[in-house]
Image 1 (cartoon, rainbow, N blue to C red):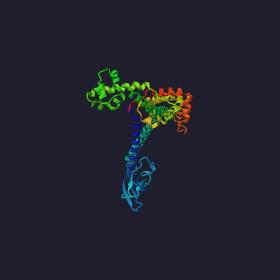
Image 2: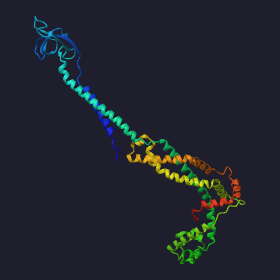
Image 3: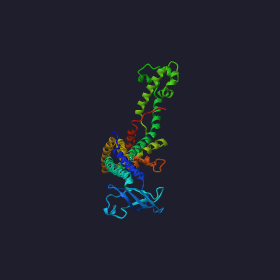
Image 4: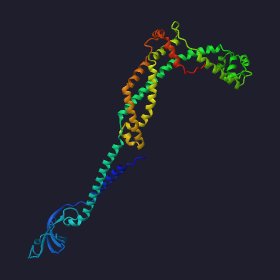
Length: 406
C-alpha cells in the first residue's frame, strides 16, 4: 500500500496559514504619526457627535470640523458645565503630523474598525496555523519513528562482511580446484589421445550399433577413433561413400568412446621422473592436500551461507538507514524487519562458531603458493610421503571434469 503523507500535508497547511497571517498583518494600513491637541467642543449631542475647534500646531490657525467626542467622559468636561460663560465643552484629540492631511483631525475609532478586523483575522490564522504545524511536526515524527523501527545498519554491515567472507572462501576454493584441473587436463587429454590412437575405427561399429561405413572411412585415411574426432563431421562428410548424417553418427560414437576412455585412463605422477607439467599438477594438488577435507567442507558451507544471505540482504536493504526505511513501502519495511531478525540469528551463530575466522583461515590456506620453490621439490617430497592422498584428491576434484579431445 502506498504511503500517504497525511502529516506532511497538515504541516504544509499550517505553514500556509501562518504565511497568510503574516501577509495580512503586513497589508494592514499603519497608523500615521499623530500629535495630541486640545479640542473646544462647540456643540455636542448625547451620542458624542460634536463640532470642535482646535489650533493647528503646524499652521498656527484656528480650524473647525465635526468630530466624535468621548460620550463617556466626565460630565464636567461637557458643555455648558466646562465653560458656563461660552457654553463650550472640552475634549482631547489627535491631528495628523505628516502627509497631505497634516493638521487634520484623526479619529482612532473610525480607522480602528477596519484595521482591528484584519488584525483579528491575522491572529486567528496564525493561531490555527501554529496548531496545525505542531500537529504536523509531532504527528509526522511519531509516524516516522514507527516507520524507522527496525533500522539496524550495524547488523547489515556485519551480515555483508560475513557474506563477502563466505563468497570469498568459496571462490578461493574454486580457484584452487580449477588450478588442479587446468594442470590435469592436458596430461589426461594426452593419455586419452594416445589410447584413442590405438583403437581402430572399426570398433565404432559396436558403439554405433552397426551400419557404419568403416571401410570407406579407412579408405579415406581415417583409421582410428582419434582420426574421426580430428576430422570432424564436415571433413568426414567429404569422404566418398560417407554422407553428412553418417559422419555425424561416427563422430558421436567417437565422442562416447572418448568419454569411456577418459574415465578409465589415469594421470600418473612419478617423483623419479618429474617434468614441468606433472610438477605443476603436484604443486597445485599440494595446496588442496594441505587443507583437505576441511577446505572442502568450509568452502561448501561458505557457498550455502552466501546463497542464504544474498536474498536476506536484499530484503533487509531498507533497514540499512533511516532514509531508506522512510522511503520504503509498508511491505518492504515488514520484510526488512523479518530479514534483519534472521540475519541477527545467523550472525549470532557465526560468532559462536567462529565461522568468519574459519573462512578467513581457509582462504589463506588456499592462497598459499609454491613457497618460492619453482622446481616443486618440496611438493614432490610431500607427494612421496602421502601419494595416496594426492591421487585420492585428484580423483575427487576431476571426477566431474569433461574430457575433450583436441
